[in-house]
Amino acid sequence: MRILVTGVCGFAGSVIVRSLLGFRPDLSILGIDNLSRKGSETNIESLRALGCDVRIGDVRDRPLLDSLPDCDWILDCAANPSVLAGVDGSSSRDLVDQNLYGTVNLLELCKKWNAGFTLLSTSRVYSIASMASLPIEKSTTRFEIAPSAKGPGWSVAGITETFSTQPPISLYGSTKLCSEWLALEYGEAFGFPVWINRCGVLAGAGQFGKADQGIFSYWIHSWMSGRPLRYIGFGGSGLQVRDCLHPRDLAAVILRQIDHRGNDKPRIVNLAGGLANSMSLKELSTWCAAKSHPALPENDPALLSDSASVRPFDIPWAILDPSLAEEAWDWKPVTTLDMILCEILDHALENPDWLDLVAI
Image 1 (tube, helix red, strand yellow):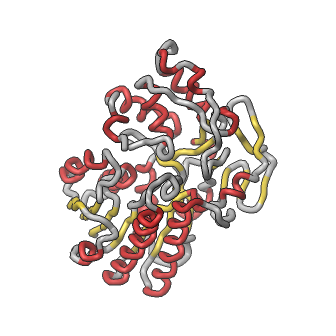
Image 2: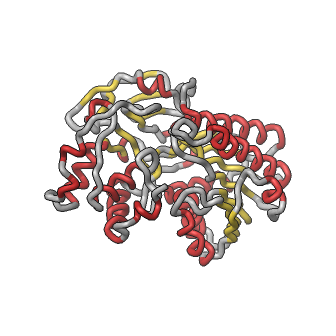
């Protein structure tokens, strides 16, 4: 089987490909990447050493896509993943061209090849206003939901697939949600299988973390290299909570989806670390302090408690409930939160200048 993987040199794409080949060494991987994310170029040679056919290209380049050999499946990992994309001075048109029309180009390939399609989507398709209105309580270390609280599409276990997707969800979230709809429509219209995996925060060693995307990696690398950090928004408390998932845990369910024949499984599932793999920035800071010398001057707690205005699209609590994936696909995250953090820490200690490499 030949699989086309877009965004193959990115953090998620490269880790998933390595994991797929670990499960099935006989897979043929054709990957394309435009290398727009600085640092992604570091994955080219290691992927080629595994036998991957890595080509530099863009999902918006239709002649390039038309020149590719037929594939049996497309795994779409290509996207501008920043929730601030298009409103932070970058081009909103470029965002839509890449995240939405690029996906349309891939769906046209699926139609041409009669290939299956998997979209890596995001928790950012869920309504910001609805998430912001959840009954959040404040503990000493994090925002949380009371164990007995429950509402449409949410509980203490997290946001489910039935939660509201009503705008605003950010331009990034909108391009991914529209891509989901179009993928399902193409699959129905032209008779090829489509699976949509809404991922929580992905994290692990080698991630090209920034403050607005890849926060776990960014925070640990910044802390260990003595860079100033601060909590942004929500009173400068650092209580905002996210769950995290290692992308290698996606490989097993992706292969199950590819192998599945039939229409008895949900087309859209949350794949995320869930409540067990969740952490606030304050808790992450405590974890970092326990792993490093507490007297580092750049890690002065005053730097970590400066408050600032809430950024657009910031939310205090975002945990995805992956129980539907467990029920439908017998899937659970294998990599625990501590395993993920320790992996990032080891990478940070071995690569103290990593943030300089991946800075934009």
